[in-house]
Image (cartoon, rainbow, N blue to C red; front, side, top):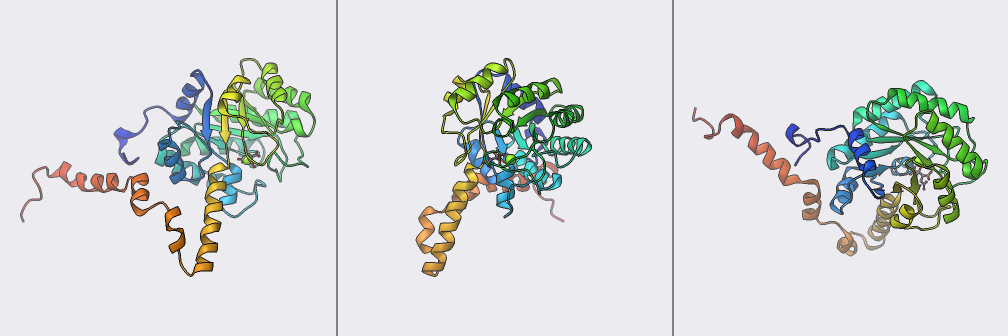
Length: 306
Ligand SMILES: C[C@](O)(C(=O)O)[C@H](CC(=O)O)C(=O)O
Ligand SMILES: [Mg+2]
């Protein structure tokens, strides 16, 4: 039903629902949803949690993933995904867009917008995709302070700390940083850009009892593993962060090339979501029925003749 009806809204905060999902056995599978439509499609495919990727948001805005997006721009994405899908959402908070007060502002804004979890990373600005070379990190203590700030700002939202150290300072430093971030208040850890099964397993063995996230981004440093394989390696969450946008972007580029080549869209119609399919996904008829039903709650016998 449309998110507009109070009785249909989740009774618990997204943060509590995200925590409950983490407490279940098995790995929590969080496909990237880069907008409200993608979020409904992922839910319809059977997922019960989602990821909002900084790389996908910025790419969809025609920008590189360098941390030049703002808190309110991200909140716009969070709101549409939380409303359209009703699912708990893990949001990419990049570096927190500044220092400790900015981190706190981010956490409050994201939680108020409907996010269930947020991750913060230990790079300096301009940050980079974790799977690129040439990253630079802030001192571990500065990141720990950001984590403590996020913890203080959180009502229910899950605070996750990402460390990019494995590819910069080495594996041991990544473990050391992760432990420091847990001590500072992180609920979960995202070890970025591990590149072998051994590394994933060793990291999990070094962090007993801490929920860990695996990032199964394509064309990066991590070879393909399935959700089940990550679960066996000791991971509690897996994201496919940019996949929906990559697939949509490729389809879009083919569409534009075809219009240009053929003078119209006729050759691409078979690749398109039909009007009916679109309306089914977004629930147009539910919204129309809701609209028509409101007057009946005031005048159940129909409109008086005056
Ligand atoms: C997870 C990530 O932070 C994202 O923004 O989705 C990126 C994904 C990517 O660029 O492939 C990352 O830094 O890994
Ligand atoms: Mg990112």
